Image (cartoon, rainbow, N blue to C red):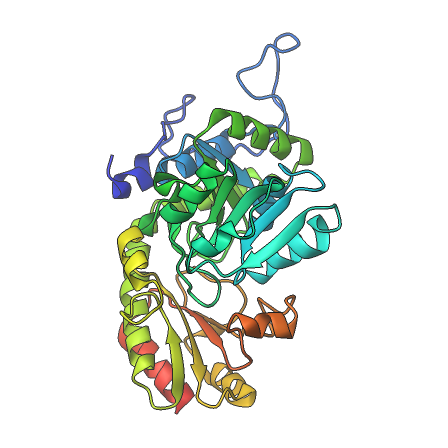
Length: 379
């Protein structure tokens, strides 16, 4: 199947009971057995639920993986990956990453004896100087949040394989519509399915996809043992969202390009971060590993003026000031005080997350309306 068909039919089957085209919401905690162990594949819904299974199969299909796992949030999915590690292990991570990931790494797992190195990976060769026998995982976001930095997945995978290190990619911003990290050499793909996969800002969920059975078995054990699973209603909603992922992403990309180009020529805007510009660092890598450049755009005002940035986002009418991203509606955020507030100011600013930075999640509304909203807000 091609990708667009996979979003609707990939690894899916009609319900065995009555032929339901959409998977039913199995709102149950437990399942009848004819004798101890005599069941139809399900015993208890923390361990497995038919609606969740349908979603996990879809995750695997759209990422060209073999095994999918669904969690109660994106952070729960990352937490499960971190639980593959032991005290004394080391992780090399993107230095420009989601604030929630940074908080989990530094405030939870660092206290458990895992050491983290936050490294600029625009040039993958920089990674090698941080490697030692304790390095067990490389964690990458590309495009990164919120600076839209692009990391060469294939080049990092070569380094990871050379040193026998696990390699995970947070694919939330790109989605499998734009890039498929497992095909580029990653071992694990993570999604905050809350974002583009769900697509309608009505569900919180995380997902993992892998190809290797031994790795999948470890993660399934952690998923069941730790219990941070999603419910059947949420599974149904994300499965429904995935069925329109391809057509939504096409419009997100079209609108994202229009917004980026408008901002780039505006006299009051200092810098626009969008991988589609030819002068964007690693634009050629983005062009080679992504189908298009996505709907996420960040920008700064001239003079790095905090008050001016806040004034703009308060004046927006169609863009809603809110946390999160990836829904059908356009959202605006101020990373320094919202999504990245958990990162110390000096660390934030080293990666470009200055006080005037505004991050846009460009939705699927009419392009002209979005441009007009930005025009009236910026002035």
